[in-house]
Length: 142
Image (cartoon, rainbow, N blue to C red; front, top):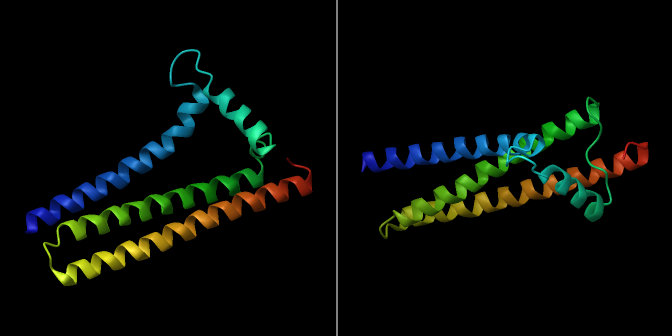
C-alpha cells in the first residue's frame, strides 16, 4: 500500500510540474512563432482579441498595469492548476477507496472543496480582467 501511495504522489507532483511548465511556455511559443515557420498564431490571436473583445490587447510593455496584470494572471493560473490537480487527486482517492466509507467521504470533501476553490479562482480571474479593462479605458490606456 505504501508503494501505491508513493506512485500516486509522484504522479501528482509530475502532473503539477509539467502543467506549470507548459503553461509558462505557451505565451513564449505563441509570441515567437514556435509552432512553425511562417506561423501566424500571434496575429490570429490579436485579431480575435480586437474583434471579439473590442480591445487592442493588454497594456503597453513596461507599464505598471501590465506588470500587475501579469502577476495576477500567473498567480491565478497557478492556483487553477492546483485546484484541478486536487480534483484529480480526489478522484484517485475515491477510485482507490475499495468501498471504504471513510476514504469515500474524504474524497468527496476533497472534490467539493476543490470545485469551490476552482470556482473562486475563475471568478477572481474574470473580475480582475473586467477591472483592468475598465481601468484601462477610464485612464486612456486601452
